[in-house]
Length: 506
Image 1 (cartoon, rainbow, N blue to C red):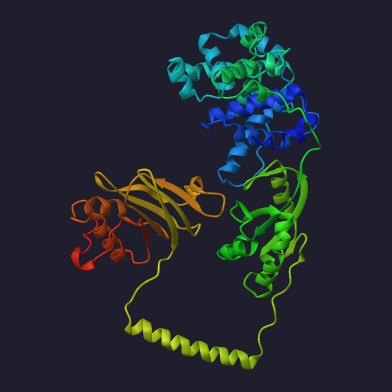
Image 2 (cartoon, rainbow, N blue to C red):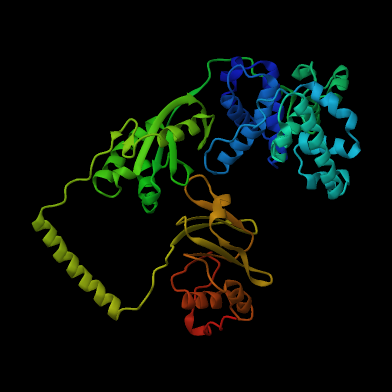
């Protein structure tokens, strides 16, 4: 197993910080439903450690680790790279005295809310199922906890009575996760003389539960034996102006496959890859295919490590923020982008115009006397990979397109996903396209400009046809000729002569 950046981070943090971060990272991954494999734990922990400031203590490191682990998961899932907000109660010094003042008012319900919801990170619905306590009682107990903690904070000199519930909840979470002093070394955490400490310490209790459950090993809580300086990366970020989004694919081809999409109009890559793409970028601009004032970029150096196409650490955010501060038409290492080349001489323009008119005449003739076919408003490119009980579909389509997915189930044609536009980020691969799994043998992707009116009705009525998917395709192509229809290889091609006209919409 690769130790990632672990060996290079050892000397930056104390063993207590390392253990606190490892426990919180593994716990957060587990609560997010992620299988905590050794490689995943190393990558997630490296992202947290690379993002922590030098000299941080164990409590603050543990407090930040949860949000940073979620940030790591967002990058793995292809979501936009962004800076997550810091806990708004960071200026409040929370100590064990807070828990001592809170403990006397804890009845069994409040104790369950404190430990399971604020400590372990369960939702109140999960606590309701786990502890068999109704939601109304849990909500009332949560309100009571908030009032007690507000009073404690006010006594400590903070205007907590004016704070929103979300801010008070952050404070309660810090109280619930306060470790007991004197945590044992990682390799001693399961010993009998450490049991009484683990019963009282949230951090060690979680470590014991995960070790006994096979989620982590005791060795995961200790830094590696060797160590070196922290890893550094040199990262370039390129930003495209929103007005030029229609040219996104041209820019992606110029940047090359090493460029990782980090947002709607943002790409990151190594400095070396950006330099190699410089010739193609300059040609794109000088040929007039992309206005130079619609592009800017920056290169920064900082702590980080590439894990496949995911950049761990804070430098990705810093590169993007630096790029946003650059003037349009300026990209670090490439300097100011060139202006477009001068237009051709006038005589050439006339010859080109003559040729264009001739070509247009031919095209008009073809369009007039040939079959009339309308191109889709939002073309879609898709690849179907046969997997168990269905298809894994990788597709690329305009960001403004509306996606519908219809599959042939045991009950006939069924709308699996309807009217998906902004929410299709859940399918993003991180490489500029999307991937979705549909557990049926016959599947159709539909892409349209504004959705398909009456799609559910058409799907329902097609179930009465001998070949329902053939009928459905004919109706949609007739009533909505600019909708893109891409079917899995199992679909029989349309024979318009065997299908009735589309039924009237209700």
